[in-house]
Image 1 (cartoon, rainbow, N blue to C red):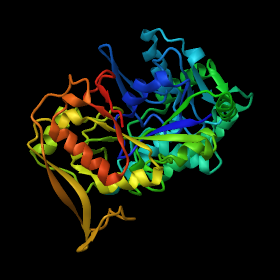
Image 2 (cartoon, rainbow, N blue to C red; image 1 turned 45 degrees about the horizontal axis):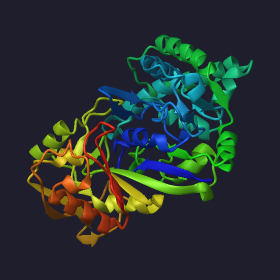
Image 3 (cartoon, rainbow, N blue to C red; image 1 turned 90 degrees about the vertical axis):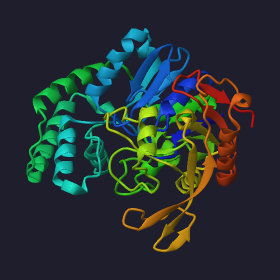
Length: 425
């Protein structure tokens, strides 16, 4: 009678979608607990590559129920496109996908606020995906938002018009011109509203707690990464929700004492999209090689991801604040044929060596301190068990485990769900 949790431990893009898809058969319910369509979970199987933005990554398993929780913000237009994109897979979506009535809705004017606000910042942009996520969460905490449950009420269009008018006044104050058509956005929005209404809109917190009592196995799926958490990330270059394990409780309405295992996902190196501090970022040919070999381009935005060495200071911090019980290392295959690997084990800040992740890494003079590992020159994408992996990779993994004191139970050696090695640890 418990719930497992899966989340990212870096700045997002760790490969959470692949792992959820790979382990979905172990669960009855997959529940997404925060974020919006600024997330992009890429799943590859049987020659198919598919990107999900709002819908949980367990949707391709015929036996599981998928729930969009109350902590998620939903763009009806993007949701409709996701639904249409899934039609070729012949999934009975209406019986497999439930949506929380408490989830908030992204309005067309939220996107315009996002774009005009970002444009007004000039060089101080935070790297928003411009999906309207931040403004939607602002309306949520400001008690102005529109929720999924509102769209089945008779007066919902009045609520919409009132909030839209408030938004248009705010947009005029930014005095910024953006190339976005409100008419087009509204056309997509209202088509998406029709689609949303066709699904099971539920009190998901009641459904999930009842399912826990019935002994159902539940996996809570996070979006983005722990270093983008609104409270514990590299503020202000963060997302607008709690991406850490605590966010699963508020984002699904489940109590903390029902959480059992917390699975943390991280890459064998580090990446970041958009602005913000990145102590181990590489600006040389190695960084470029990692980007090209790893296909490090944003699943939602298409932007180049910034690439760098693995940062164990940041990783250990994320493990600590999440209470991670097991780790999964992703994209280890990308580091093949790089002769020398570096791993950050501490920072030097203003001349002082520190081994913890500080409050502010944006304005400080930070120098990462590295240790060196020998690389491996072997294609590991077809390897099926741990014994066949190169010794250098095992040494790399063993050191990470000893440093963070949490076992690595899964090694990903490629993007397909079959390119996954499970360890007996």
